[in-house]
Image (cartoon, rainbow, N blue to C red; front, side, top):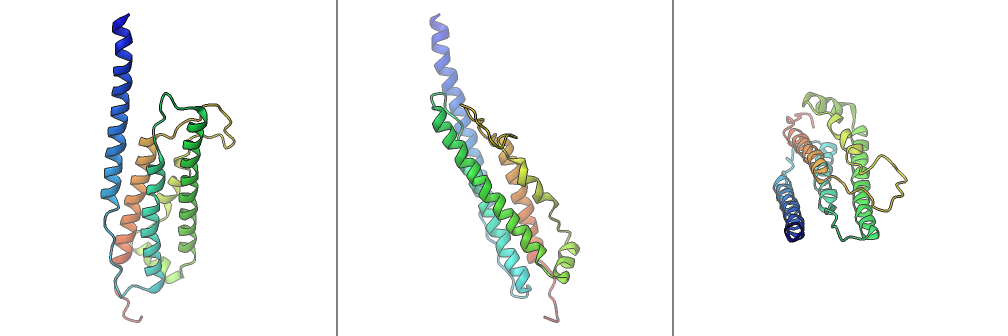
Length: 182
């Protein structure tokens, strides 16, 4: 009986330590992914330059949900867990709003600019998956005592993929050829 009683705290401590290590690893990767800002060349069309700035801003905003995820503690009350989940949901809402705003700015581009994006091999398809891929639950009106915590690995996978696509989008946009008639 004493062996079982001593193993439980060790197991709980080990789980906490592994979870903490994973969170720190993800935060370090996040810092590395978003560490550099690209310089906007002077020859770039003003609309495309504004889009490049907005793309970079969106890339930075994607960090928020990942930084708001904290693994639930065993001793956490249902209300504290609900607050933690609500903070994540609010961050996800802000990211979705930023993505929709970015997609609207793409729609507002002229025909020539959209054609250039197509010629550069850029598409909005990779960004739509993040809009609904990181929900904690399918139930919009979730009313439970213990809210389901977000899956950090799933969220990080989607966010990292989207950040990489945004960076590729940004680099391709900034490497657009010079328009001699501008």
